[in-house]
Picture (cartoon, rainbow, N blue to C red):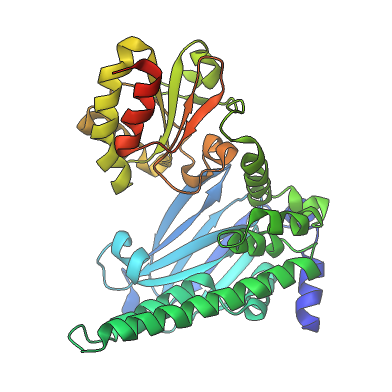
Length: 380
């Protein structure tokens, strides 16, 4: 515990001072030569956008270098089986860690997940943080999936076993959330306090989280993920039926900025979606039917995509495949899309119907409910 407090204290002003010590990050890895030719992938955040890189293992070595504006939760994937990144990142050998402008010396013996990492005070502090709250989120998810997979599907008590496993791991997550809240309360200068509150906020009321957030240091509250959490507090209070719809601007498919305020004087449905979202794609024909029926009566749709830079082509392809004639915008920041953060969007599809005066008149209207609400406004 003493060591953790020292680590947290050392990181208190890390976002402001650490980058003066090293211009960027450097990851130097070694692995058995039996892995030569295999690829390692790195996913992180740069300039507010998702960034990716890859490195092949040559002569038992691999490396990455670059810069980040602030420490951020990142992922490394080791494609041991040569099946490609997509498969490896879902069920393969993965490492979730905090990436800062430091030097990381990684030694892989048989798995990236268990690699020895030295040279990074940030990583040491993160490991200490995970030990205090009860382990990494994805480690618990993987353990749960392994337990589920071990159940024989034809076992007479299979459903009872599944239920018991679910309850066991949900209890583990709840115990973890209790520790996260305690950590944030005791460590207001730690950058990990924000992550603790974000994770706890997925199950706890934001009204319970906000008082702890307000006690975090000014420096920590300037972190990008802290500002996004703060936006959720604001959205919960302001993005409601009867309130003004928050204004934002984002580029359309041609790069032209489109604003919510551009639609003053008409009804606009702000629709948050993504090309990779199956429920979104399933809802598109229903939305298209409503759009075709009410477009001439004054309805417009402003679709905000949560695709990222890597998914830009998929976004444009989905628009074409689904035949969506309305206005489409995206800043290509994925879940960090600034409009989605402003509206407190945590899942897609999600939409907001805004009247000609700019007020929100309906939220999350889909399926038959969409037609019922629009019929009230425009008639049948």
